[in-house]
Length: 161
Image (cartoon, rainbow, N blue to C red; front, side, top):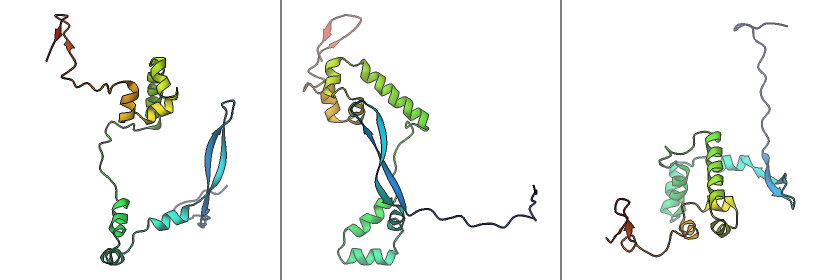
């Protein structure tokens, strides 16, 4: 075994380039609830790389001046966006824990509310925060806060606003 130094190294060999086409997979659940992964097709990754290549400013301006309204839109879509993600999970473990918490909350719901989501926790999570979610949870009763009487703990009586 030879020990190499900074001045005596083996010759560098170029890496083999990757494949242009990459397999695309999907999950299928059979009648017994077993999940199987199968290949649905192939995706041309090189085409995606070439599509995201920045065009020259001159060609973008020429397209825009000729009336192509999508020319500037295509450039805007490639840029990032600003969002407050300070409360977003920072690791995969945190995200999985968030999903487990949502699953636990779903299981604690009464059966009639779970039935509104077809007893499907994925539907519950995907609709969370939408008006449909509020309606299924029974939060959209059509009443405004001014119409709902409030009960104070000290008096135990209703206070009309």
